[in-house]
Image (cartoon, rainbow, N blue to C red; front, side, top):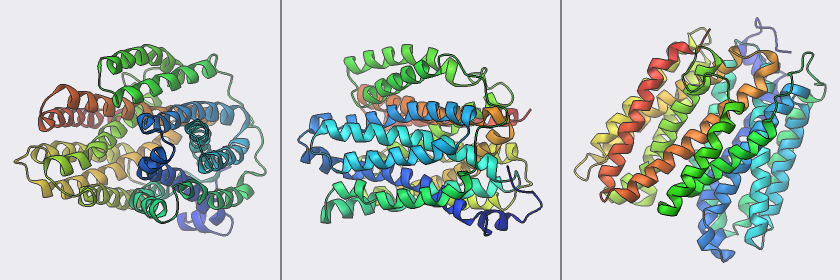
Length: 448
């Protein structure tokens, strides 16, 4: 059960009884973040070594689709039987995936490793949310989620360069294998907190069709991810089929009313889709804007992303020190920051645009993300009954994954259809700004 709310927040996070599990949670999240970002840097060397350059996208698609399955199954297990098995088994599965991928000599073995990593990462993410709900008081959760945000930000800063150095000086195999000791350490750190956790007193009733829906959603996400990297007639056909499969599956995997942001948990899940889709889609295309349109070097083109990451970390840490502020208000400010950053990029994306504005603009968007994402994590637990934390956590992570897959794919399609990259990206930015503004309107609906 959660700690007494009268305990000072710092003691609740880093006191003798909580220090290990807090560090373990941060390490678990950081490992998944590093692997997700670091593998992208090493992937050209990986597929070249395996002689499968034409299959470049498949390791990413395999990981993304498997994450969907792990997310759904992890949430179902946590609600029915508690988080202990998930928090011990999911990192172990992730570690086995690292071992399989790190020793791969063929594309097939690499894909098996990526699937195992994806299932483990998805289930582990849900388990972390359930553990936070059980271990920390409501007053300490903003600070915990601030730490979780920082655990994603650090890999975005160091993951790509470290992965590049390891690949160039040693071997891409160590991008996977080098993380294995840290996985073991993370499990040992959270073990004392989960050892005594059994089945919840009031287990959630089974949700019919959840496994089949998870597999269908994974197929849909895989199709959308593949179509986003193959902007051809065939890619368009695959995207249509993927949506036909995905939409009915989502009806079983997210709370009723999510599509219309019904007040309460449905609005929380809808806002996760809006803020993740808006922010991360711009992040995906920012290096392209800076490199192709403005001629910045690849290393310099990543600077706006670093500024955005630092803004995210700073805002997440700040909100953690102010647990009494209304989270819907902070969420509204967060969406406004993301909307301002996205809209401001319209002055950057033309060839005649002011390139350096990307730095402060994406810093503002990062501040917004730090406020908004952390607030949504807090609201998710606040609006969830004890028997639904796993289900709602998995729905939130699905919202992240699906919105990004859909919007990044749409951006790729615009680039393929429109002859001018500036025009295509300006159209995309206009859509993303509108989504962030919709989040401003929906923020007040996230509490009952």
